[in-house]
Amino acid sequence: GQNIDQPTEMTATEGAIVQINCTYQTSGFNGLFWYQQHAGEAPTFLSYNVLDGLEEKGRFSSFLSRSKGYSYLLLKELQMKDSASYLCAVYDSNYQLIWGAGTKLIIKP
Amino acid sequence: NAGVTQTPKFRVLKTGQSMTLLCAQDMNHEYMYWYRQDPGMGLRLIHYSVGEGTTAKGEVPDGYNVSRLKKQNFLLGLESAAPSQTSVYFCASKTSGDTGELFFGEGSRLTVL
Image (cartoon, rainbow over all chains, first blue to last red; front, top):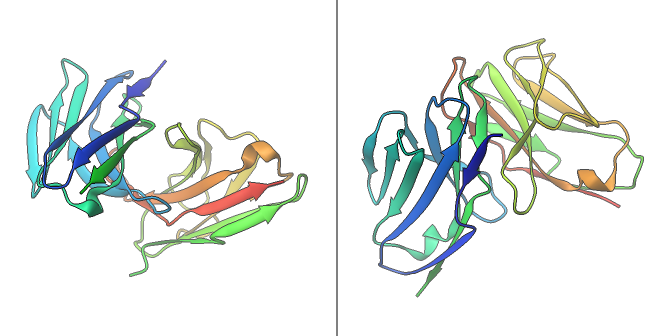
């Protein structure tokens, strides 16, 4: 079966750095997304990785290692508004999007 | 641009009742999707469409039907609602092509008593 694993919940302090990991076992790979979802709202796009390496976008960075089936989302200079769930999703060999259950990130002052 | 709009936002049904959720997008996207989101689980694909007049089953299609009569609209129907269909439903769309970012509606929270 296809599977994406993320931690269920993480807690971090305002101003700090947090890394959210995602490991995947899918039938093929055609790209990996990170989405942010605030409680009661729609998921919104954060990043897309298709090649190995780090993609940086402001305070957020996303890393991919295809050989390890692994990605992480790095959030720097955490702000209270970063409290949200972070969803990892992978396009498999049939270009079906497989979603992880999401990581709820709690930011404390 | 409104993006992706879902109606209604909230609905309470009794077991056995029927209803339709409407999704409308103004981005001229070819592909549209209906997902359900339940606590502790990833988004699960119910049905999807790759163009006007086409529909296909996703991971959890049972108990749902869909129609894509116009390119901008994607309807999700529940013929006979069951408590197991209590969930938050999200519509999403994207441009044509195998990959690409999905744009989501704000969600529709459905409770079946």
